[in-house]
Length: 314
Image (tube, rainbow, N blue to C red; front, side, top):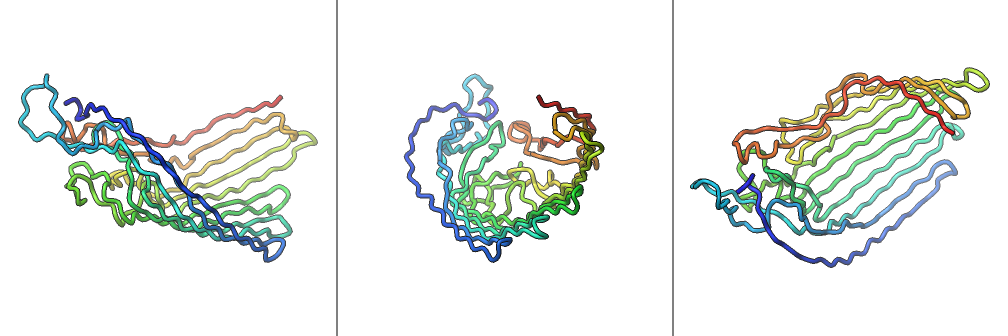
């Protein structure tokens, strides 16, 4: 055995047939207010996970013939190899509105999507990921976005999303390192009733931008925006150790350039609030399965940065 990864020789073939209808109803209350209702069904094809470290067999991992004698129980790594097509049924209703003689617009959408055989990527606790299916899940929420041209030079824009996600049936989730299996197969963990990776209850952004001419050929632009989110978990197994707290990230830009947009020079600041933001996290490969020690790794967004940017178009 090397890093608890199996050698295997597998083959298979698939044939799929799906019908993906969509129905859209639209009603204009006024020339400035449009409402709609949409129902649709879609799918994502299934396939084969040739990169899985494990075969679909539930037999213990065979010991490397050249390794020292080892009487400890051999680990069982159940791979997927083949995964099924994902199916989704969605209903959405909303409105698009133009206000103040076109100076502002507001869009509102409410949605509900139900998944069958939702495709998921599951870390095997060793070196790789197995693509599999969660039996069913539901995501629903609301989205709001809009902009307002307050004056010829000043614009306000923003968006807000409210989201709820729940696995209705997910028996083959990735257990936490050292966690006793809770699923009926005695190997995986039951995630039924839990949320998903990256799901925050709410998130959004606000932008304030000002642009004005300095002369007949030169202009200036200043913008400040804030990106905000509630807590979320960036790991497939929702390990609370790597929970990402909610944050507000500020960005800003001040630039001078030609009104014909042939060139511009700008000072750009990103993440000015210097937030520590985890974009992805998981268990450290081989940390627990081989060495018996719990560990985690993560990818982070860049810290505060300030840059001078120049563009020229010809």
